[in-house]
Image (tube, rainbow, N blue to C red; front, side):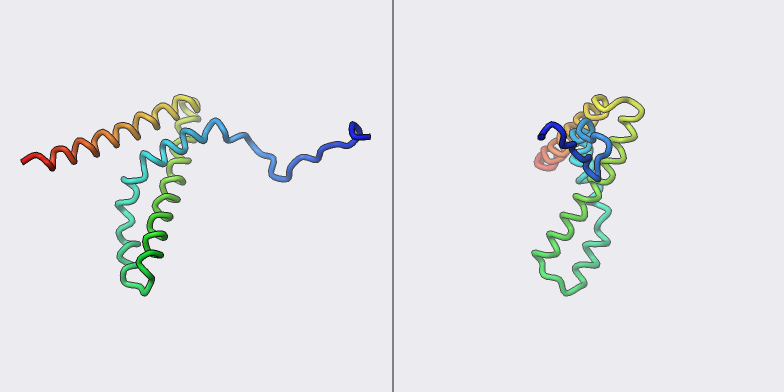
Length: 113
């Protein structure tokens, strides 16, 4: 009886995104800070409003994170199409590490007299 029951496919049964998830996360991490900088207009608009500071921080952080995830997805998909998913993820790791290195190097340079 149980063998005769068919499993119905899920209504949202689409392509498998698991090979792209590490690359998307790495590209979002690599692009988070550079893409957060242009959101100063949104920050100014929120500062002029009557929103609480805690809510304003959540809105700014979530908007910059969503923007980085969206751009990271596009970049990873384009690079995965051209190079392959593993190469796009590796390149995302290099860019994230490069950004971290230059961030730490600029702080060290500012600390020197």
